[in-house]
Each structure stands twice: as structure tokens, then as C-alpha cells.
Length: 398
Ligand SMILES: *Cc1c(COP(=O)(O)O)cnc(C)c1O
Image (cartoon, rainbow, N blue to C red; front, side):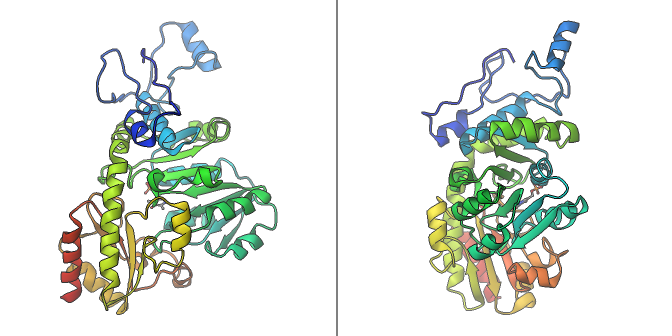
């Protein structure tokens, strides 16, 4: 690209950076960001090719390493997050996998909260031990459990807050302090909160990972992921891992996500307003024994959520008195809300974690994560909140 990359400015606010950050125009002076669907790049001379490979010339070499559209997405997301650096990946799981595997080795110890997205749990519980990494799981809400688990040297802490699907809130400041005393780097899966509602790096975390598939796309179109952290980590530790193992994101997907970032803040506002309305309605229903939403005064960590989050997110979990039959009745009774295991979409989606997203876990593991047969996870979309309440009311009464 011949024009200069607009430099991040500390004086601009996140809402401006979401629209302007990372913008790098070509000589055509396009308004919208260009999509560079190219795997490779050409050199004007043999000397230029050599300089590009020996590092004396910083330019695009191959899209597994770097691509202009992907770079715009990375830069914009880094600016919104307030992170020094960002690397995009093909999916959220590629981001989680790379963020962990690039920094742990045989003999290391990893401590994680047990209420995790199913595939994150698999990586820590199944994959890491294959390579001789010792792993320990703790109840994320129990600071004494963190203290005990982090009383010995630890390489890495992995956690998700709010957690999927039970919306537990973990005290980021306290856990980061304990982790750092044990020598660990803290990786936070910030998918449910998004950079709009929570800034883990400001609370002490070292690395933030995202499934950009969720709210950043926000319209259920494509997969993507991102890892954010220090420039040193992204360049020297994560960089070689990504370059040589190849979980690169398609420039097309990066472009969709880049444009998604422009409206993320606006969309999160509606997601949050709708989710609170739905949660408050469900709290009034006799069929529902428990409504889990960080914005409700009844949420066990509501005060902590208020301290470390700027809003409560799009996900509401409910437990039905009638167990699985009642859950299935509601799933099959809603007309507007779709049955789907995805989340963070413009369309409201509902899922039964016990039989879908967390099906592979043993019943004991599910129960220890707070997942019962009567639990439903609702991803509240951008429709009119009153239509969603009416849809749920109709399904509960049927
Ligand atoms: C969806 C999700 C992931 C995985 O992301 P993909 O883009 O589906 O690979 C990881 N963590 C959480 C909390 C998620 O919701």
C-alpha cells in the first residue's frame, strides 16, 4: 500500500477508533476499507525479495504471515481494546489454541477456571496433558481455590468471564495478582463481554482472546478470532507460532469483521438493553427457577460485575423447574427465537447446553460447571425486545 497507515492517537475515543482505527487507504482513495484477496506479493527486484526475507525491509511477503486487510482488522481491534498489539486467526479456537500452545512447554503448569467453552475445556483437559503439561481446574468464583492452585509455580492461567453458559463472573484483579505471584501469564477469553463491556488488560491480564465469530461479526456470517497482548508477546512468542503453524484468517473474513467493529458499540447497546428486558421478564415467571444475568441484582456476583464491566452482555441463562422436558418444550415452543448453538448474532438464538455445546462432557463435569438438564442459554439479538418477551411468554404458556 502506498499511502500511510493512520497512526493510532491516544486522544481519540474508542467509538472513533472503532470506525477510523487501522484505516489504510490505497491510491484509489476508497471510502470503505479495501479487501485484498491475495495470498502472495511481488517484488520489483531480486534484491527487494532478499531484503523482504532477511528483515531489512518491512513489507507484505505472504498472507499466512501478513495481509493488508487482516492488518487493518488487527490494528483497529488493538486500538479499541487499548492493547499494544493484536494478531487475527481463522477462528476463536485457533486464537485460544495459539495463545496457549505458543507459550507452554513440557513440565509447565496451567491453571484454568472450570466453567469454560467446551472446546477450551478440551484443549486444556485433553490436549495439553498429551504434551506433558500439568493442568489444574478451579471454581472460578472461589478466590481460595485460586490461591491454593496458584501456590506453586505456574506458567499460564486461562479463564473466561462472564463464563459460558452459566455467566459466572471471575474477579480479574484478584486472580491476576495471584497468577503473577506464581509467575503466570493470564489469558482471558473475553468473548461474552467484548472489548466494549470489559477491558481485561486494564485489570491486570496479559493476553486477551476473542472468537470474532460472535459479536464482532454479529450477523452470523463468518468465523474469526484474535489474540491481543504486548508487542513483545505478539511479535516474539505468538508471531513465530502463527507464521509456522498457519491458522491464518481469510482476508474476506477479516474484512467482514473489520466492518463489524464499526457498529459493535451500537449493537452491544441494543443487545444489553434487550437482554436485561428479557432477563427481568423471565425472573417473573413461575416456570423459571433461576435467571442468570450479570445485570440482575439477584446474580451472585452482581457487585463484582458492576466493578469490572461496563455493561452486562447479550447472554441470559435460565433454569426451568421442569428439567429437560420443560427445556425442550420452550425450545420447540418459541417461534421468533431460533434454536442454534451460535451466539452474539443479530438474531436471538436459544440452546440447550446439556445436549449440544457441552454434550461431550461427563454428567459430573457438566453439573460441576452449573449445567443442568433444565438449563437454557439465550443469546439475545437485536430484534424489538417486546417481541422477544412476547415470544417467550407464548412458549412458556403453551
Ligand atoms: C465461540 C467461543 C469460542 C470459540 O470460537 P470459534 O470462533 O467458534 O472458534 C471460544 N470461547 C468462547 C467463550 C466462545 O463463545
